[in-house]
Every structure is written in structure tokens, then in C-alpha cells.
Image 1: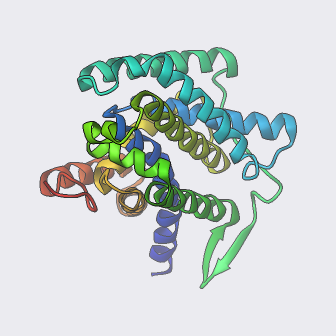
Image 2: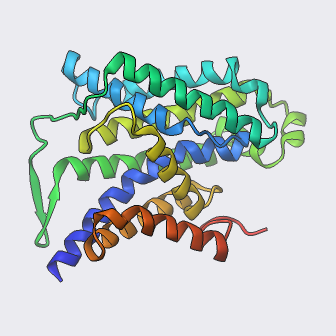
Length: 287
């Protein structure tokens, strides 16, 4: 029983990080109708920004998250205005081709610039644990999970209670009506994509504190983000949290009972089941 509880705790901690990993993908997909196949590559880029901030500047990885997010927001705004605005609201196949090309280019450039070796961030407190009801909780994983959930909930409140957030939601739900209310879609699309990449950058920064990074992690992170967004639903950040927690728990239990090699099989099996039973996701609105 103690082992099972420890595994469940680890799954919850991993699931919290998964939530912010998928939030940027879900935001861009819901508003721009773009399934960003380069999402994982942008997470990878955010992870390297955090790594260099720590290695060169001595900046704590958690305190450095705002720097990473701001840099990634600027990159996202520029990419959207310069490239993706040309295909915003275009047939999805067009955007899949363009974002796949971005993923390939970013991975290749990362290999050239950063090299292919594995890296991780190891702050002075990286080996510390706390005991909670007999469970061993790594401090870094707990902090990363807590920050991920806080950022996800903050984005939810931003979308609900700010003028810009309401404009983003209105554009996603009814673009012609949003235009009638003075919304300028090109700028709003660029801001939305910038926010998506800011979240991806923050996710990368958190990821680098608990996992090794290299230029090739992007495809796997994109696949996991896609699965989380589908499982939880695209309509609300709460759905992304639910999807992340479900995926984290499924992977943890699969590793315990079937072995680590079956974690991906189990998680994507749940994805297929959700698509069959509830295509809108656990917390998504049904048609």
C-alpha cells in the first residue's frame, strides 16, 4: 500500500507539470485552429533558455521563469505575425505542414547550437525531500508541480476576467461577432500565439529542473501535450489540469504494474478510449 501511495503521489506531481505543458498547445489550438506540431520544440527551447540562465548567470530556475516566458512570448508574437498569420483559420492540413516544418528546423538548429548531449539543472536544493504522511516528496518536483498548477489557474482567471482574455475567448467562439465588437484578429492571434509560447517556455523551464533535456525531446513532448489536451478538453484550463493529472497517474500506474516501457502504450490507450467515449474531452463541452 505504501508503494502504491508513493506511486500515486509521483503521478500527481508529474501530472501537474503535464498540465502547463499542454496549456499553450490547447490555447493556440482553440483560438487559432492551429495544431502546433512545433509545440514540443518550443518547450525544448524554453528549457535551454532556463539552462543557460542557470549555468551562465546563476539564475535560480524558478526565479528565471519570467525571463524565459517573456523571451518566448516575443518569439511567439514574431513567428505568428511573420509566418502563421498567413494561414490563421486556414485548413488544418496547411498549418500542420508549416508547424511540422518549424519543428524540424528548430530541432536541427538546436542540435547545431546546443549539441546533442543531455543536460539538466541541478540547483543546490535539487536532492532535498520532504516527508508527507510517510511519502517522500522531492522538493524540486513539488515546487515544479505547484508552480505549473498556479500558472494554469492564473491563465484561466486571465481568460475569464480580463478584457484581453475575454476578447481571446470571443474570437475562439465567434470570430465575426468579435470583429463587430472591434477586435483586430491579426494582433489578437499574435498575442495568443505569444501567450502559448510563453506557457511553453515556462513548461520547458520547469521540465529542465526534473528531467534531462536534449534537442530531440520536442516530438515526444508534442505528442504528450496533444494527448493531454484531447483527454481533458480544449474549452477550459481546468480540462488541461484534469488531462495532465489523468495522464500522470496512468503513466505512474502503468510503470508500477507493467513496467516503464508500457507507460506510453497505456497513456495513448486512454487517449483512444476518451476519443471513443467522449470526444470533447473529460471537461469539454459536448455538441
